[in-house]
Amino acid sequence: MKKSILTLLLLAPAIFLFAQKIGLSRVEPPNWWVGMKNPNVQLLIYGENIAKTDVVINSDKVRYISSTRVKNPNYVFLDLEILPTATAGSFDISFQLAGKEKAKYTYRLENRTLQKRGFSPADLVYLLMPDRFANGDPANDNFPGVRQTTDRANADGRHGGDIKGISQHLDYIQSLGMTAIWFNPMVENDIPIYAYHGYGATDFYKVDPRFGTQAELLKLVDDMHARDLKFIQDMVFNHCATDHWWMRDLPSDDWINTSKDFKTSYRAEVIADPYASESDKFRFSSGWFVENMPDLNQHNPLMANYLIQNSIWWTELSKLDGIRMDTQAYPYPDFMAAWATRIKDEFPDITLLGETWMAYIPFTAYFSGNSPVAGSYNSHLDCVTDFPLRYAFEDAFNEEDGWKVGTARFYYTFAQDFLYGNAYNNVTFLDNHDINRIFSVMKENVKSFKMGIAILLTARGIPVWYYGTEYHSSGWEHDGHGAIRKDFPGGWAGDAVNVFEQKGMKDTEKEVFEYTKRLGNWRKTNTAVQTGKFLHFVPENSVYVYFRYTETSAVMVVVNNHNIEERKFDGTRFNEILKNYKSATNIETGKKQSDLKSFTVPAKSVTIYELGK
Ligand code: CA
Image 1 (cartoon, rainbow, N blue to C red):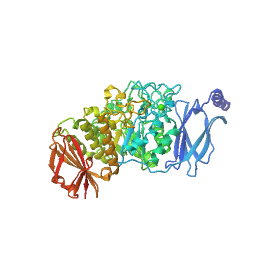
Image 2: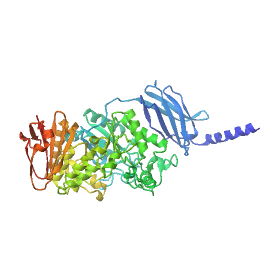
Image 3: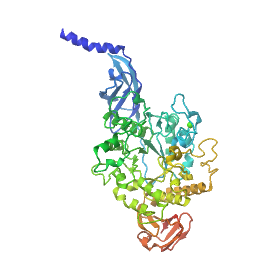
Image 4: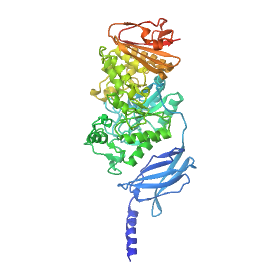
């Protein structure tokens, strides 16, 4: 008697279930690869009541390990092992109720693409915002149902730039001496405002259709690689958009952190601060970035795995040379280290760059891989963003040299490189998409601006060039992000100025453009600047001298920060390097001097000499 009651109780939900609708909307990652070092993959399955089904897989390619159900019955997480004997091909995942199939997904395993990856100090990286570079395909500007339509009159709106526009101007990018391109994110951002910048993902697995198709993206990557241009993709693990599809139906309460009313403090320094309170650390790591960007909880292992697999998926699919991780410090540091370790396991030569936006060097250095100042913590990053150097660029040329100011800012910045794991890998920049245009900060002084360019392209680090800096684009962040992310002139039909063709440009724009092009292409051929060691001398009399050198070659860089006076100086002070050389050729004028004791450099300038044996 008791037994039959139990049977009835067990059967009751089953009968109820037959009446319930079963749906299958998403499987992520949508495909995977054979030959990964980690044979396991965890699939997020989303669909109406999908957790109530039995998952059945009959395949000799995979072993079903387990499934994880969460609070929301519309999700199930499936752990599979891809067997060592598996070859590329497909298998079916069947979702059944009482032996009857209610939904099916044909899962595809692909072969991996074996290729060399990575970028290095030998590269010069062009950073561009895809919406703002060139509109190669006006037909994809709008789609029915997208939350924000294209409107160039709105500085914060979508402007229509796309993958095709980038593809059409690879010649241009390379003509400047660039060897890599870093793209702001291109995943779907179907949000009602600011839909253009890429940092508000609504689907981590989909190229925003206003940029183009996945096929177009993969074609762009192949075209770039065929030209020896490297591909660096921006990724965001810290947050998504409130319009992300899962926000309408979260898997569990701990999928995201806190609420829109609890914002981060943006004080990344608390991660390294030995006296930081737990409440400050909690607020920084668990607060929302802005009210329409929910903070993802990477301490939920399902979320952690989701993000890591997403980055592996894009890296394998789009043959990434590098990843630039947005807001590197904001997700939990232990998770970020685990991510870097895992992705390096699969792609040992990929280059990982973390955005570390902090003013002070020790805090920035804390996040560098193998940092000597991070105690037991190791981010395993290859590169961090050198914001402290950017701050030196901002101020040094606007002021007279002094003990701590002027060129001393460069001296002290580089002198603290012992705090980094490897400062040669620091990513250096004059501009980026989040900060005031350096031309405006430098009071639109062309001499100062060219000095910045010369230092960026010759000092240690991996220089990043933000699109538009080549024609000294100006703009202040306080006027809105649109002011520092202007449409590239010539990227839209009918543009009055076309920088791609150097038409309609002002004289100073042309001067800066030609200078950039000359130095960029020169850098591409100069081994000392690309791979050499760095040696500098304490600034004296407004002059700061540094060298890049290898066993067989050297470049001497002389920065004269005095506004009106040329400087003559005795080269004997620099004999550590100069003793090995017999001549110095000014790379700008072509003038060669054999007397290495007597140098004369103009006021407010950077003079670059190639040393000859
Ligand atoms: Ca377009």
